[in-house]
Image (cartoon, rainbow, N blue to C red):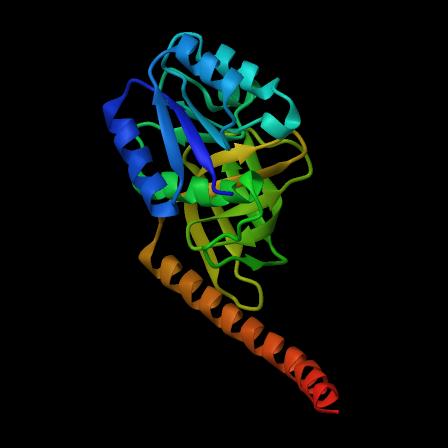
Length: 245
């Protein structure tokens, strides 16, 4: 079964970016421009994702209603926020992910790719690697270390000792495992929870760091493929031999 999305927004520009993302990922969608219509749709139909424009009146109420639905009918909730809405308030209303206005296609695409694992068991298409390294995030209150859980070309997921304050434009740095290369970038939170887990999208990354990261990901993917081939080949051959007998 495919995944589908319900969008509550009156912004033609935002809807246009979302529709382009849905087309690339094969996501069906429906657009609603009002709170009553959105609530009616939520009550009668199931959607894998709900995108709520927090610039609309009572958007937080719609988000909280969606989060109160039975687990099997509860959509993954994206909060579209502008300058008038803080990241923290969107998460408090129940958002799983945030999309920053004006929407940027790359950020939206990365967010939905990250969320697909929550919507169903689809594998993420972006190359991702487990790592064992720390990232250091520069918050206004000081530097916070966090374990890097996954790395992709577009961003990374983290595990900190305590809940992280979701913000935009957070400077960060981390060492690529097995190298002496330091990646420096600026990240925007796209999700966070109260247990210190979070995901950040690289909003800025130096060209040299981007090249180093791409090369590291490619090398690790090649090594992983080779390891899988070496491990699986003898087992496959033994099955073939057994079948021959």
